[in-house]
Length: 379
Image (tube, rainbow, N blue to C red; front, side):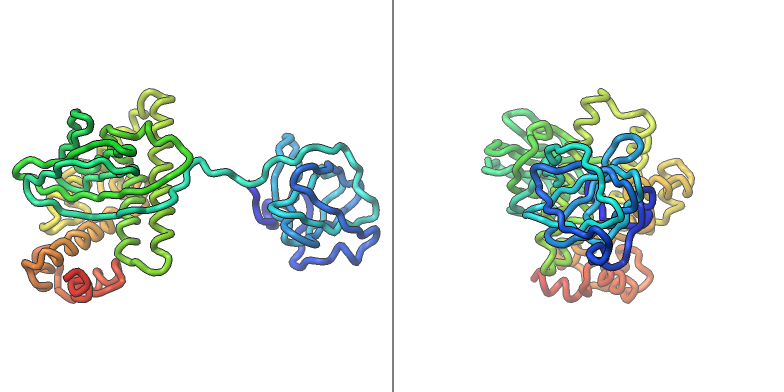
């Protein structure tokens, strides 16, 4: 991967200067055309100055182990004597100013390696992104869409039926329906599941390995999905791009997990145990969301210490357990506001906030609007 030129990464090869253009004033200064197809490999004889003259040149220097480090030559550098290097171009043509007491020695001419990193997966369109609390015993009669559809169970349980095969999904589980895949969904009579549904178009990686089966999301993937929900609530000029980028990251995370699972046959016992603890904690929060929740209480109910629970949440979800509780209560408050059965004071009390003002401050901090403004927006 191409790095920016910086003192720390470059100190083994030479010096980085703050300003461009210095080589042209030195002895033997000349312009070197840079190609993105064929390139010359040099070795410096004395200190050699290099600086960008045109385009986007890439400086590749060889380490002692024979590997190449690639730097975007956007600043002037001075290479030490004895450094092996070559120049290539990103995109169109480029040129480099080269100078020094002696011209570098030409070692060989070679075909330039491809510098840009390719994409394994590219989400091209986000067709739908929904967060819904279903009614008890809901029944979705079925459909087949011309694009993949992801359904994640945020709370409760749901049955998915794909080609006559039933898949039971519980909190933290998801299913990915493939293109034109007929499927139905329903819940048991007393179940009111909360679902995230995402339909999208994508190119590149084969998503079939993820389709039509129960996948329990690893904590890293859950954190990405929660970030998508926060981004949807924000909805500014950048949210569409952010949602597509986060969805792409979510799918890549699942593909990587799947490849690792297939290679090893099963996850390590330690990671499996940690995931079980996180899942138990998430389930406890979901089922007691209308009660007073504290981190010590949560740790006690999953039978571990507060410090270990905090470490696991930071490791897998990149947030503290206290912050997770806060976010889940605020997500629940949005559902209660949309239902319209309780006023804001009653919602704050039901969710065990000390005051309605405290609830309103946290809501605005999380979603960028007050609870009353949100209520008006969904009427």
